[in-house]
Length: 199
Image (cartoon, rainbow, N blue to C red):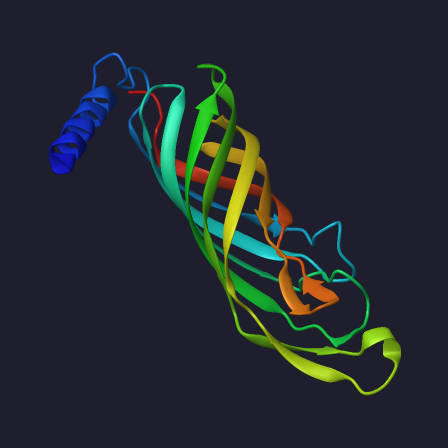
């Protein structure tokens, strides 16, 4: 019985998504974007620095105003800390995979949009040297873990070019009971896409 209900639900959702009323009319359905930019350090942390970020985003237009897709993103940065005391804070690389949706506010030549997504990020394994309050000896701690990531974005498209501002939230990674590494960051991105334009 449960399998039958799930099958009926899946059939309903498929029919809903491919309904002629929901299909994109003026824009091509398939859209693949390549964007890159600069990811900033967490403004609520201590130290750290931003770095380059690049992402590949295949997506599908359900309607002219609704886009759903997947984001594969790579970034390098020095993560901020919850408090000072690091003698060695190494460069960290991360890779994330997310699903997202975007809503377009118009069908003009220049189209503004907002979107949101969620996924998981994997960080490189590094060692941080921490000297708490600079009293006593420093100690080394292994860092780098997998964590959920959530993001919101605002931007605009013109022709086959896109520019966006994005905020990515990731939970802090604990190092010691009093120290944590910040995983959140904002990013500004520029890129281009193929497909997704006027039919």
